[in-house]
Image 1 (tube, rainbow over the protein chains, first blue to last red):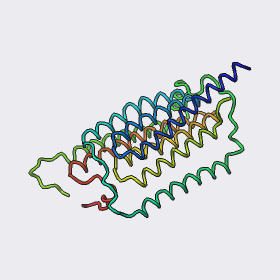
Image 2: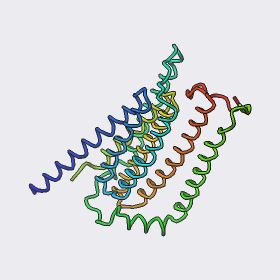
Image 3: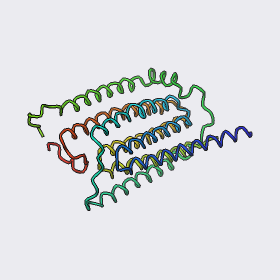
Image 4: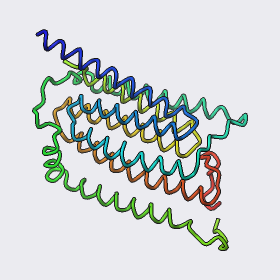
Length: 185
Length: 101
């Protein structure tokens, strides 16, 4: 019993640390003016989310999160930020502050909507199921699900990635013209 | 017993709200893309929390598909940002309001 409660305290401590790191770095991403710092904060956000995934016994998704997101995608982001140079946002020029008010209202309305819908629809079923098998979330289980039940989603995902790669190449090569040619824009 | 799935859903909802705020409020397209990643990750956290709650692996499959789509979206978005930068267009999403220049 004592061991179990000590384990609970540990799980809660890890959850609290990861959740607050996640929320804090999320706010930091939105509020930094330099996109470089925002990207670094997003790496922290993704890392703490991987900890939360581990607590939810989704080991493979946590590993994929760290490898794909914090590894590949964020490196791409940092390369592009380094390429276009650190430029801060131009300050508000006494501009339409109703835009900011509307944005805050829309985000708040969305948040309230999420809370209300989850509370109405799912509050009876949110009890934590105690145990899952050791195979839950393991690479073998994920791979079996991908290649049996969700084969179509798997193939469509590969097509989406291929289309995105081709689109990235086209977008990157399109503007690489000789300087004497008149740009079409 | 650790924190229930409702706690994870609360974190997911706040992440989604934070990302929404960034997408609507910021004008640098790079930060808009980063905020979009936060929104997608909030949705992913809810998916994986429900997968754990229902003991069903389908939510994790969906989260992996969302990750792949997010990677594609970042490729196209960053390609657009680089193309805009090459044409010396101001990186401000409020000024990018015409398609043919």
